Length: 265
Image (cartoon, rainbow, N blue to C red; front, side, top):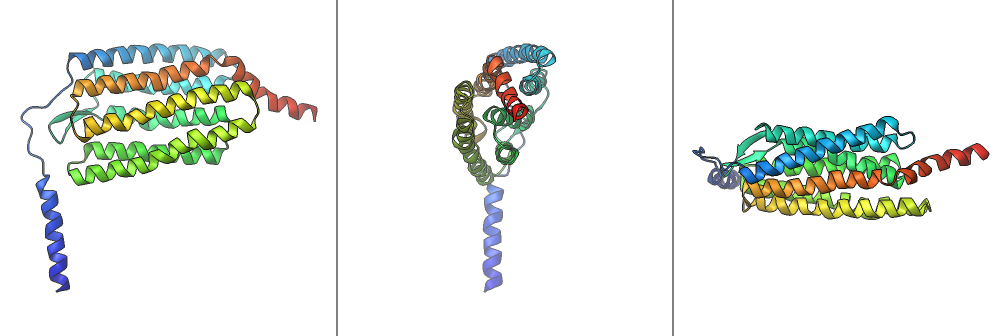
């Protein structure tokens, strides 16, 4: 009886998987002119931002680590956008839909750098930053695995796993890092962290929504998906980075204050 029940369960699972077996695509829904225009604008903005931050990194002193991070954030994103604009970094997924995996190659590098920058501004310890980066990386990987999953049930399991990792990231940015920066009692840094942290939390919260209606339900057209992701990328990377650059003096004073205190002890 036990063997028959196990066999029946195996056959049921096989049937579930078989029902979602994809068929060969005769046509693929690809990005249109609107999406290509968005990719072009995104690439130009990102590459210009990269040059600006690179020039800052070469001339700044205490602030160099911040500008180096912003340079790589926009630089890696610009590379991904160039790949997508050049017709590279994509494949066809279930539903015969164009899927830009180059975007996830971007996110696996740039979102940890964003977390690192937030941690540096907040003055968080290395362990806290590392744990938040780890959760962020798992979230990105789960989103990618869900996007390329053929079996619908598996796709939504990956999405739920990703959301389970996304929530700790949000908690760290909204609570843990903020509590750390408040203890430093530096009004300028508290104000800067509050602005860039909430910008990041709000913009990153839109990514799962767009994922749901593009990679998830495939309700959005590929062009609309590209436009939506481009807007979010520009705000969460370029605007975020320029907000940090605008606080040049505050970043320098926060870095130099501890060394001065040690000098007079």
